[in-house]
Structure formats: structure tokens, C-alpha cells
Image (tube, rainbow, N blue to C red):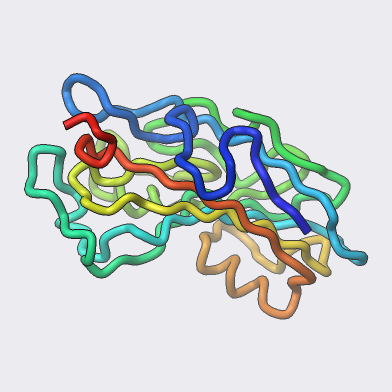
Length: 212
């Protein structure tokens, strides 16, 4: 089973167009936030559906420190880190061989894109911007589907993003209502025939980008 993208090579930096955040003259702003092109093949026999998860495992566990700005002291790379889900997509048909660039996200939508229904009969879960923006009257809401990288611009660690495609033995994951990455991981137990991964990196730290 293989998973790849024409947007970047495995392990390489993710292009800005697939990120929710970008650098600008004032610091940072929302970016193009295109869902990336993905392709896959060599699914195992018996695959009844596919599930896709993208998460960043380098998000600072201390949310208060992570919410700083580019002018704040740089966060040390050895801070405790935790997962942040950027995309949760289930019930993709096994006949599908990939997703086109921008097919499921074009631009950042304050308050979140609608869901859970998505193209190809799939369902999209809530990503973790739902909790991140909680309490922000301009941005709070339910963020379904893909919203890309927007790591803290003062973080001293380059963030890593892992896209994982799962081949499943069931046509529909037993999840009702809204769900997130943790719920999907629980529902996958005992139903995964095979999996493939694609990784990429991203930072908005000007020093790490060689701009300061």
C-alpha cells in the first residue's frame, strides 16, 4: 500500500499553498489552505473503505505559550508536545485512487467549513481548530474537514505533519454524529487491513526559514 503527493516529496517541506497560515509584513495571516493532492494504490484485498488522518505531533502541550506571536520569546524545541488533528476523513470508497488539489478545501473559512458530508460519499470529522478557536468570537465554530498547518510563529521547532491512509475491512466506520481524530482512532481498532503514510514539515518561524 502506497500514499504520495505531487505537491511535495515524502519528508520534505509542505508548500505554503497547503497551509492555513502564511507569513506577511504584519507577521502572519491566513493562507491559501488548499487541501493537498494525494494519490494511493496497492490496496489490500478485501478493502471496503478508506480513512485518512492528518495530524501534527509537534504542537506545544502548553496552549497558553503556544498562543504567542512572532514577537514573543522563541519557544524551546524541547517543550512537551502533543497531537493536533488537521484532517479526519472516513468512508472513502475503495475505488477512489486519490484526491485532487483543493478538492476539499480552498481558503480558510472563519468559523469552519460545513460538514460532515463530503465528496465521494465520505464523512469529515472535526479538526482541532475547533478547540483552538473556542472563545474567539470572530473565529470560534465547528471546523470540519481540512485546515492545514499554522504552527506558532515563535516556535523554535519545525513541525512535522503525518498523513495516514487506512485500508479498512468495513464500508462505514461505526461513528455517529460529529467526531474527531481521537474517536476515529478508537473506531479503527480491529478494522485496519493496511496503512500507508506521507510526511511533511512546516514552520512560520522566520529564523528557521532563513529570513531573520
